[in-house]
Image (cartoon, rainbow, N blue to C red; front, side, top):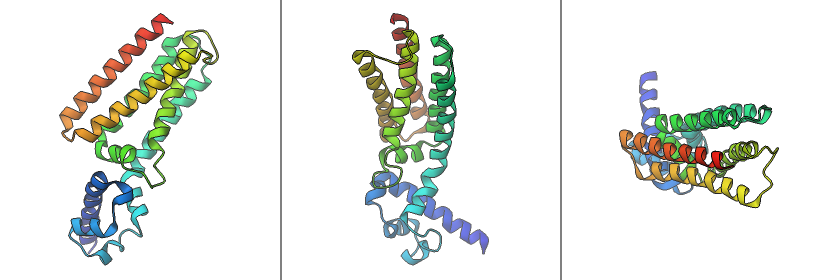
Amino acid sequence: MQILKDEVRNKIMKAALLEFKREGYLKSSMRQIAQVAGITSGNIYRYFTNKEQLFDAIVQPVNDQYTSHVYAIGQKVASSQAQDTTNKLFYFYNIELTIIELFKNYSEEFMILLNRSEGSKYESAKSDLVNLAYGILERVFSRAKGLNRLTSVEDTALARMLSSTIVEGLCLILRENDEGDTLKKLIDQLLTVYTEGINKLIKQM
């Protein structure tokens, strides 16, 4: 009996992944997910109380991993007293590596989290990601200039632009590519261009 329950639950999870990816949290319904899973509408509620709980099952694991990694690295950057920008960039690159690995391993779940979570408690995930990236860049740029924080409007705008650009690029790749090898190649290329550009900017500061 337990094997049957696990099988049904897995069907629901797979159907939910497809439905949330296609329609997003806001437009998806438990009824439609049940239909895709090949079960009755009443049966789906034996496994998940509501759509919110089902959405949690899909995106919370990857969201928790991402938040944990980025928070830990962000704390190290914030507490570091070193003036050497290479040290700061080391932490920034670790954040990039964390992001790219999560995208590679949880591409569909991450795509849903960042692009299809409107109406859920995760809907700020994309803007939170931009803010976190900006926080790191702001710290890196300010240290490169020998400052505690950025004071130039131009430098602040640059950091915000770059933060938004990398997140939008990652989201675009996820939205338009399902094939694993292609996805990984595009993300690797994007991150290579991005990090090389940051290095050049640092040298000019």
